[in-house]
Image (cartoon, rainbow, N blue to C red; front, top):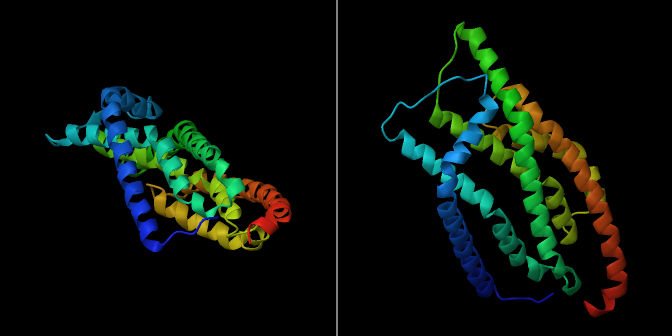
Amino acid sequence: MMKQPVLSHLEDLRWLIIRVIIYLLVASCLSFFLADFIIELAKLPSKGIITNFLILKPTEAITIYFKTIIYSGLVISFFPICYECIKFIAPALRKEQTISIVKYSLAAFSLFVLGTIFSYFIVLPNTIKFLINLAVHLTSSAPQFTLNSYISFVFAVLLSGGIIFQIPLICAILTTLQIVSPHTLKKFRKEVFFALCVFAAIITPTTDVFSLALFVFPMVILYEVGIFVSNIIYKKTMVEDTIYGDTND
């Protein structure tokens, strides 16, 4: 593990931020040509539930396209952004561990895609149906929604799903960096579950218990998966410490 001065780390961080912004801008420009298609995809979970969308302001259409382009750009550039972020922490890893950068980046992207798919096909349709039925119960009439608010809701749910599914990877990285161990993850399981509930309540775009439960349940499962992965990495690290221990002093 190579030690670097603080100023060097700050310089690396500055270039990391610059590269991330460039990736996001380039990907957003590319997603501009897919904006209409993505908006139609976003409408599909509400098919048969919401019949018409409203646009109340002259500039609202521009806002909708802007949100779509930014979110799509984030998804497209997620892999290189993860690669750059994990590469940034590579100096904290031992020499024999740095080859995992690409694998961790692919894992992050794969988990983000899985979380997005889970949110799109399971969370969104059920949440929309539940909220619409609740609104009809309260007003006794078909509620109306603006396309802008709906698009914001959809992208927030999809992004939340992508972030939540990073839990196993976070456990893996923290174990690789020897910040936590499987024993620590198991010991504080109850506290973590409570923190996950709070975190889900913060990032979930709705305040209903039904939507919260749809996120909390997979978070608990993912945390258990994270403990399993952490245990594998921890045992591997112990073996490597035995083999490379003399060379890392």
